[in-house]
Image (tube, rainbow, N blue to C red; front, side, top):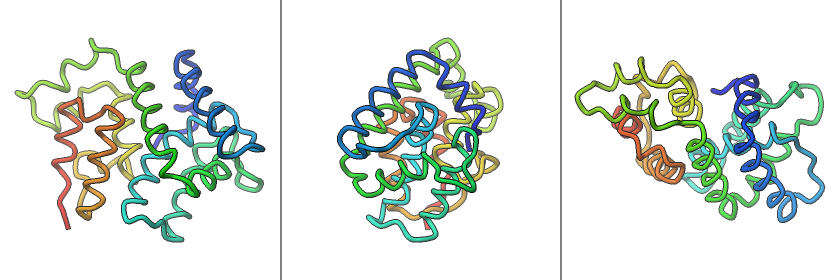
Length: 198
């Protein structure tokens, strides 16, 4: 899972800040007109959207899943809001209400951000078919591995062995990977192949 500090570093990039701000203005105007949220916290909400998508694979988010999302949201928030209203949690409530309308826009923003963050000269290794998955993980750009683990796993340490998953969730993660551009990389497809279907 991304840390608050990592999100703060990512949002420092001017291109990413513009991508985030553009979607934030659209979201506030059309979904949450009185919401106040910084670009750092809105980037946190954007990054949470993949987890929301996985949990919405069954078209319903259970109470425990919503609590899990809120816990993650609070960890991403700038400055921490454990005892007061949290802007990422507030944004999450709006996102959950109308996820179908915003899902693709949020994934497109992640796709644009990843294209800014992952430079082509850093990515040669991750598409090398002669290198096994585990070795690729160890030598791949740190940020790419953080993206995969933060967006697709509950625990970062499961990157080499993600465990079992329901087919409907697997299909949803595959769809999300395609929409955010990670399926363009062999390392992501090898990561997905590590899942065992229930």
